[in-house]
Image 1 (tube, rainbow, N blue to C red):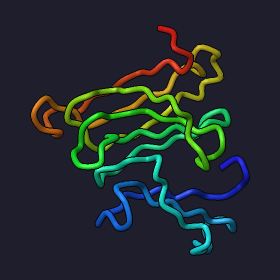
Image 2: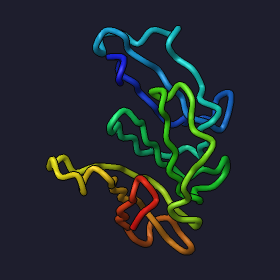
Image 3: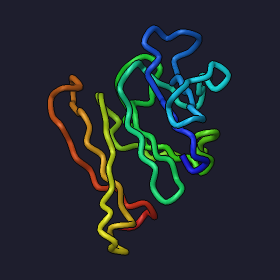
Image 4: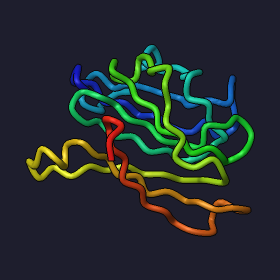
Length: 143
């Protein structure tokens, strides 16, 4: 993260305490995961699924099916505070069945490439595993 910590953001397999993500930070390069740095992120509603995260230019991006019961509503969220808080706005990538997601960016040095992130995710109309989709997202609302 920007502050030098390592963030681990995991699915809450048994919905312990909430239908949200569990986050823990290491302050020593991953040697320890202090319990004082573990918390439930109530802003990241989650149906127990692998999610995507990407840090780019000081912004932390996060994708998952944002629903507390079913794997639907793949959503992109972002944080300007290393995940300590999340912006109230979000972008719906796919409203239907969706599962695991992963994000990346291109680091070619091109000004044009800096405007985008890319998300690959499980997508379907009836079931989450019908297809794998890849989407290019403009970070500033352009085309």
